Length: 188
Ligand SMILES: [Cu+2]
Image (tube, rainbow, N blue to C red; front, side, top):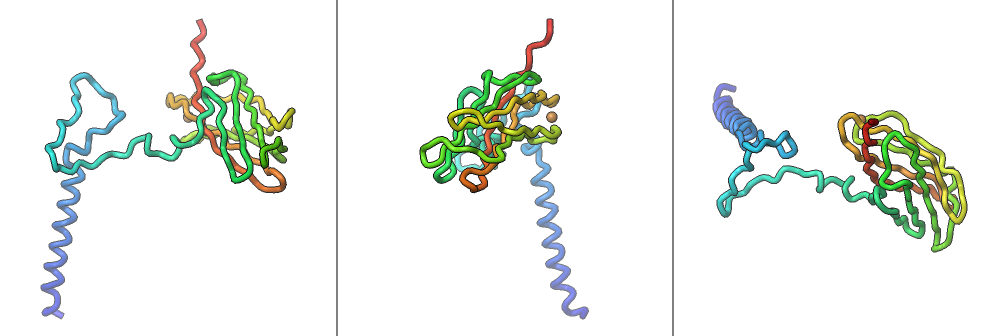
């Protein structure tokens, strides 16, 4: 046993050394500056790296899948699911927090108006903001609507996600959209 312990110990030291090097690297100052933190005039961006020097790029909001969701804040947005299209529209635009908004969903199947059976629309944020579920009531020409009131998040984040669900021709459908609320103007 004693004869095999030495190589193992050496390997152990090597692993420990690598771990310590990794900890030091992660803690080095260049990693402590975060984009989005309170920027001051004094705080300048890091100097441009010299050519050939690899610099890790921090993940940005633009890379997140939520940015790719269709946005209904200022115009109608559509989601295509095979042969079914769901168009979401909100009025007034842009929608204002704490006041009544009318969300309307139009469904077409194979190019013609269709009914969204059991249609409902729910709203959520990245943080829990309570339950916001509404039934979409059928209107005319494939439109379904719900009157909605959403709060403005205390964090200041205006971004909500609208999830439309139901079934079309017996087939379950789900579509996700994003919408940015406008903060109501403060009372005089
Ligand atoms: Cu919130």
